[in-house]
Length: 182
Image (cartoon, rainbow, N blue to C red):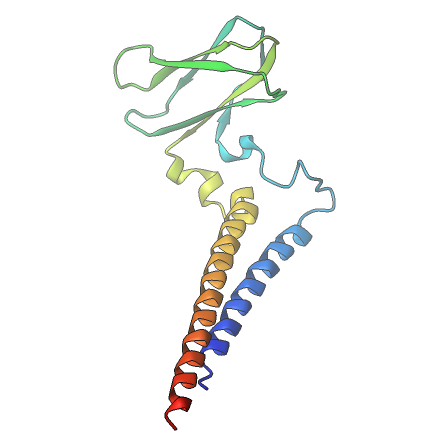
């Protein structure tokens, strides 16, 4: 009987153990102050600029403005509802106040929920050059990216183990058929 199936299974198991080790090291390597809510980076850490927190009453709206530092730059924006409740609903309309490409934008945020909410608008110009995505010490690189890599390792390891099991079955059937003719 050939040994290629068990060898492939062992390689897949090693990949899965490596993925679990990466996840464990990320969780254990974090600060002691980490509780379930503080482990992942806050939304604010993914953006370069933030507005102040604003309370928007139910049925009312607030306009946030942002002027880009240069024209024709991509703008990544987000809204963070700091006191989020499942019944919160917002509607966001974006307009260019000069109706040109100078980069002055209004974000009209309307609270369609039944209770007031506190929101912050976040902006990042040229997100591909953002500190959050390029700084190796950013929370994105320290926690999210290793989790993604561990997930890929886990999936690849599982696929390799399944391939190894298939090889074992094929080798076993092939050796069983060959032993009949001896």
